[in-house]
Image 1 (cartoon, one colour):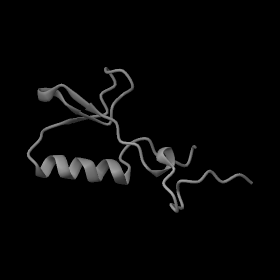
Image 2: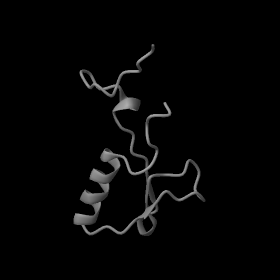
Image 3: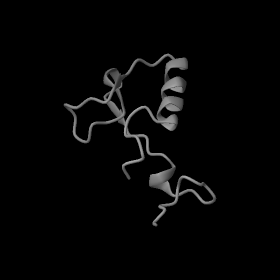
Image 4: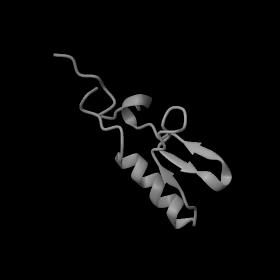
Length: 69
């Protein structure tokens, strides 16, 4: 699991781009909130956690598998 970044992952950046294009303003990685959410929309009181392929284990995805040697 050490190979996987916890911040600024590709899925997280994609979500941030969509939110920004839609005109939302947000904060990143607020440590003062439980779980340290990836994206926080303070005006709407919403916290967003973005989990990528490793956590969801998408079928056929090469990074979704845990490799043991």
